[in-house]
Amino acid sequence: MQDLSKAEEEKLLDQIYQTPHFKLVQSYVKLNGYIGSGCHSWSNWHGLILHRTPIEDGEVAARLLSYYAIPNNHAIIKNYVAAMRNEDVLRTEFSYIPPEIPRFENRFVGLNSGNSLMAILYTMQAMLGYGDDTDQVRHFQETSLKGFKRVLEISSLDEITKYNVNAKKKYNYPYIESDEYYPDSYTLEMLAYTQGWRTPENVNMLADSLNHINAIMKPDNQMSIKIKGKYIGPCFPLIRPLYPFRADRVDNILYRRYLTEIAMLGVGEKVNIINESIANIKEALDMDGILRTNFDLPKYRRNLAQNIEYPTAYVDVKLEPDYKRKYALECDLTFWAVQFLSLVKTK
Image 1 (cartoon, rainbow, N blue to C red):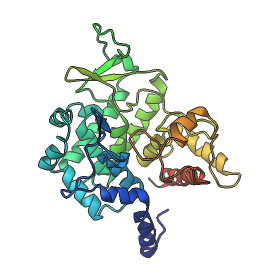
Image 2: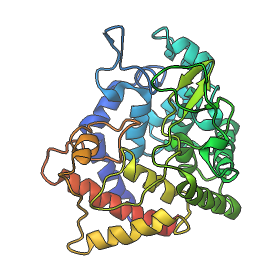
Image 3: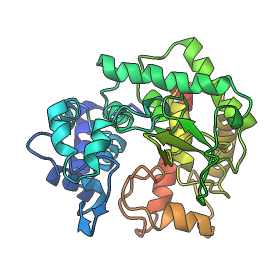
């Protein structure tokens, strides 16, 4: 709520520094500042275990530091960002297994739709508090905006996708070319965690684009991206409707995270699902101030409650390290509710 004294903040941060997950991050820091191995990378390769825990992946480490609100002047973050901006360091880090070498060489291919290694690295820098300070990351802000503008130019996903007529694979989904602009989870996050792009015109455009997505997208939409002749499954492109929060429903594995990041854009109540979420959250909190969901939903248990231990790219908002602890999930949900309502009001 931004009402802590400096002494109170330092005391709470010291408690965070003692948590098991933060200590894991510390243990994975290399001499060159990079954390772990790779970034959104293989957990094993040809039987070789590459990460002792998921936090040993560079993206997961960055997400944990961001979600724990570690100050961007902390040595771990400063050195990690410097490593992500050093081409020699990155070239070394992305050569630990053979498939990472071409991935690094092609790191900018697919950037326009957020489906490239550099899209991840730029986004992680933004999440760590360094998304407005260099031309490169500011350029990715502009790229991210163009993806949302592209949505406003279409009335159906079919207008920008193609089919590989010769393919007979089970997952022969429609695809976009690697240079096509389109929003996904990374371009959304890039804008959520940065400020340089913010003008009234851009904020209104994002609100219109998000509402347009919900108006034109079908729940069963599928899409691939064609990169260097291969058809890749992109990371959560915004090709399906987004849903407001409801205490009796869990939509997908990024359910509350999407809503948080949309609220961070500063769109306030201009996005319809934000309005609906506000009303539903307040109603759910009315009884005793605690946010609960229907924990017995099979989809909830499978995707969001029992099987989440680390803040990977494929999980929802999570701060509590152990959901088996009594009331841990209720604590996370209630904190999220207060944070969300505050973001809508203040951004």
